[in-house]
Length: 419
Image 1 (cartoon, helix red, strand yellow):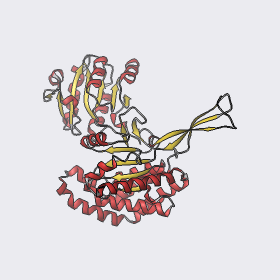
Image 2: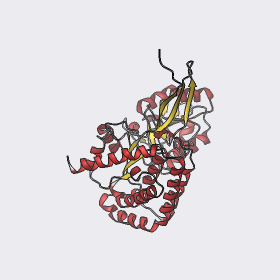
Image 3: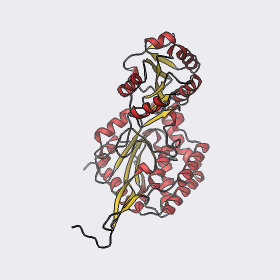
Image 4: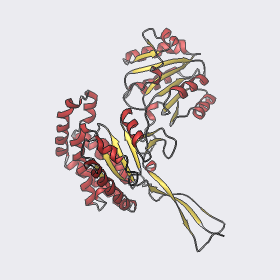
């Protein structure tokens, strides 16, 4: 057995044992851990910022651009925000032990479905060290042990943050190995952990498409994931133009580098000649490059001609593909053909169109007269999220505390036997 296989075995075994202790931990214990973690985070801010400075000094070696460096950076203010997020998670209802439904059978047997933790989560992510704390807080609150594997560019920061979380576990009487960090950048460890389906119950990758494709190909356990966020805004013929412009601007321009940002605009042919020049004016002011069909380019002369590839691309940048469609049927067909089943929105004043769009569009989140940017755990009332899933089994859309649980059947009898 290789060195990295032994290391993966150790992490997985320790996590499995810790998960048993977490599954029976009280809500109060988990609350105390979250609050104590927040306190330690603030009291050790100087040490954490110093560790982060080591990562920032190495950033040029990893070819990080300005945006990536900003995501990597920890300051006292950002640590205070992370501590506040821990308090927010502490205030969320504990899902573990919730009776989802129950019934009494004719023979008197009481049957219940009870919410339980998944067990052990292997969480793989890139760049942002704040995700270390976010993911750990959600996993422990939902009764799961977690193995964290952050990006090599944030290793020193993550080690410092993990020390806080683990010290708080010990202080509050929770299993010491409920939160573990892979403390090496060696890629082979990831491959070894992805084989440990006997001790790891689910893997959640959060990062670029290549990372998620690798995890999906190699994992022997279920994976909660999404590959792309090719999100659409469809402006129907009855849409209010100002509302549509506001929604498109927010969907595309507020944070173009996130998975719920719009990547394609579809406009009903009945309003295209009137609406698209207004779109062009707004997007030009926002410095958005437009790649459109022939009809789009006639109304927005500075737009570039779109290719087939453009409609399949998640730009994560100030670039937007656009197409004029004949009707809502064509819009839905386009979304089904080119989309990634992440987030779509329709802007319309026609209730029947809204109902049809929400019924026929097969995406994790479908909006009516609202920005695609609302596909987010916090915005949907989950409090926080560990990621977004475009799969259909177990979890779909933003994944919060409940999505980190499963259920078991519990039956109480008084001596019943089956005839």
